[in-house]
Structures are given as C-alpha cells and as structure tokens.
Length: 402
Image 1: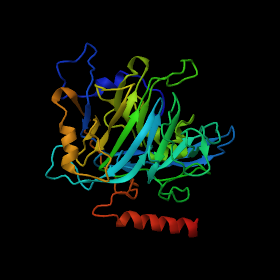
Image 2: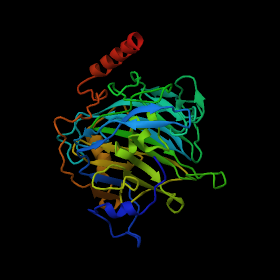
Image 3: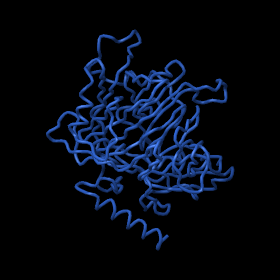
Image 4: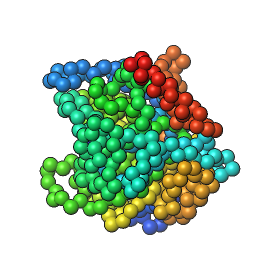
C-alpha cells in the first residue's frame, strides 16, 4: 500500500464478464473468487539510481533511465515483497512456483513447489525474513527497514519470526522477504540501489507463482482518531521488491520506482470506513490506465470475516490469469498437485466468481534499451539444484567479495 486510495474511479475501468443477478444498486457485490485475465504487458519503469544526504534536510534521490519489462504477468513477474497491515493476525504463509500452470487446463499444468513457509503456531520459518519500518527516519525516505521483532513492529538485531498469536493493530505493518541476502547496493547488481544499513534481501519472483495465507482480521478495539491513516482497514499486498528497500512511503517520488509503475498488487484490501468489511483486489500498474493511484480494481469484493480465521491467496498462472480466492480448502503442503489447486478454484459457482479483463498494450522493448532481466532464483524447474547453487554462490560472494 503506497498511499491512501479512494474507492470508485478504478471500478469503471474494469470489464465485467460474468456478474450474477444478485448485484446491488451500486454495481458491487460479494464473491469468493476474483479473477483478472490478460495480465502482463510491455512497459517501462525508472529504478532509483542514487540516494543522497538521506539523513538531512537536503535529502534527494535520482532515478536512472527507463528499464523495460514485458511478458506474462509483467511487471508483477519480477520479485515482490509481501506486506501486511492490521488489524491482522498471520497464522500461515506460503509461496509456491510452478514450471507451468493454467487455471483453465489440468492437462497442461504442472504441480506447485513450496519455496517459502511460515507457521506461527509451530514457529517454523523457511526462506522467510520479517522486516518492518522501525529504523532511522529520513526527510524524504521515511523510516528505514529493520529486522522485525517478534511483535512485528519493533526492531530486532537479527532475523526473528513473528510470535504466535501476534496482532497487528491499525496502521501497523510488517513485510516478508526471502532469506537470500542481496549483494551490495548498485545499479549493476541483483537488488539494485537500496538504503544503506538496512537488512536487504531478495523478494519472491517468478512468472508463475502463488501466495497463500491463513489469517484473522478482527475488528479494531482501539478508539478511532485523526491519528490513524488506516483505521480498522486490514490489507495484504505485494510490492515490487525494490520499493521497500529504498522507500515505501517517500515524500519524493524519485526515491521509489513505484510512481513509474514497477508494480503493486493488492490481494486483500479493506478500502475505507464504509467498505471496511469488504476485501478488494487491485493492480497498480499502467496496463491501460494513466492514473496509477486508482489502479485497476475488480468491481466485486471478497467478504472479510471479523470473528474467524480465513484461508486464501492469489495465483499468477502461466497464461496471464491472476486469481484471488478465499477457501477453507487452501493447502500449505510442500507440493500441491495442479488438479488439486484447479479443483479448489473450480469449486466456486458462477455467482461466486467475478472476472475482469485487463487492456492489451501494444509495445515492444527496443533492442538497444535495457530490459528487466532479474535472475529468477526461485524458478527451479525439475529440482532443487539451481536454488541451492544460487544460495551457495551468493554466500561465497558476500563473504569474500563484499
């Protein structure tokens, strides 16, 4: 969540494919599955090139020239960080990739491999790093990232798992990156330029990927006041991995690639006070729109439970379909069969499903222009070898070269 967004304008940008007869007068209703199709386009963004005088009133940032991206699910096919805002309790989190998966076809789809996992009750964490903005404040960058303490919002000296039954309150946030450390800050290295002194890690990348969650979003018990920016508005969302490493909430737009369209997808977001029990899903990319702040929002929501545990997530398939769903059958196993996942996604009847088609963008990256070709460290294909080789090489490089 980059800044406050208003509900309404983005709804008109969506193309309804199958709305049920139960639609209310405002044209918005509840669903259990929200799907975007035709996701991914060719475009550009401008990454941060330098951060200057970050601790003084002369703080400033510069961006580099255009970096092109293209293909299925682009720019969300790049590495992403996973963000959480209260009131929320996170019980489980998992990240998966597949060599090929199509939500419309079992015959061509492959199984999913779990590459990151967190279980609060058993305090198991695999390939996850919890971070939060609890570091030094900067006039243009805001607070720096630190390792999150077990309460999710305090600062820790090393990687720490969020304690079981931890409740984020309104406005409180933490995020999850992988546990694979970044090389040193540089426009020529894998993580680009990032803020000095922060714990810097790769995000979760891959064209075909899935994130699933078990969580609670209880009603906020604190009294509302003008001090809150997001009172009783929980959210789970994805950001291009570069954003939080430089600045998630800058006062200078050059201090983040967000404003140039490097990518955000809101999975479950309560938008405002009148919509606080409705989770909306929104793309904040330039795929057919000019105003990034409004984004491309599905004209339908998934209901928020304030009294129980919810399970669900988002799938980015190999054919440009992004599916957000809520289901008690959501699995967190080491491997998930393609048929099992498609079975879960097909269990929703037509009245419980909503589909939006994103615009087709005709653009081609010039052969002489730099492209975004970040190493896909988690697309492992037929085994674990590439993943562990990367970890070994990264560790050696950091120990002996940096």
